[in-house]
Image 1: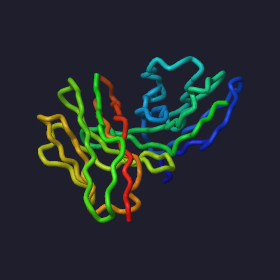
Image 2 (image 1 turned 30 degrees about the vertical axis):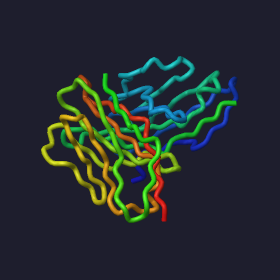
Image 3 (image 1 turned 180 degrees about the horizontal axis):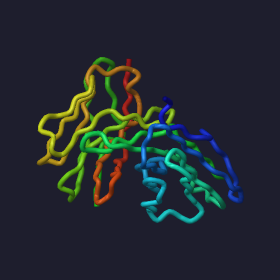
Image 4 (image 1 turned 45 degrees about the vertical axis):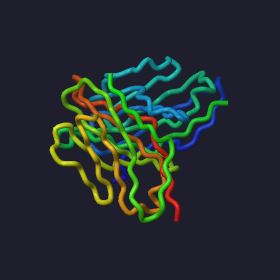
Length: 114
Length: 117
């Protein structure tokens, strides 16, 4: 069991490119999350999917487009990004543990927009 | 809204000594949980310890313990017998269901811990 995996680990793209980030978990979790981690800022929740349905969009610009084809896979499609979008993008999935829901994180994709 | 404050941008500790990382929180939810995560330079967030708001005893996990003071709204992480491998960024986060069936985490700014040999 490898937990939550993310590909690619590193990505450099120009502002006119289109790319996708992939997240995969085979832990049987029903909720999956995208976070953005910029330098010197707390993790920012971007999107949440629960049972493949998008349940949260925290005012994320439309140049970020999430997709959840099934409970095990989550994508983040990127197009016409800005340099300020350079950050570490973390994926997580969660399940119930007692009275709480523990989130398991992937290793992240470090994105640089040039 | 929920808020986590970590006032120590950086901390230094000597190997084998104990260190306390501070965390204060603010929430209006009657039921919540506090998490601590470790993030090495590789980027992955590693779960360390959890404390529920109704838990009577402070949580412990090996060398990690959580000093939970509900009235003061603080949830400090104590690492005993520090090791070189403990050098990393540490995040405090507050969890709440907030009407969802999956819960959400709100993170603090993090504290960079450096362990000296």
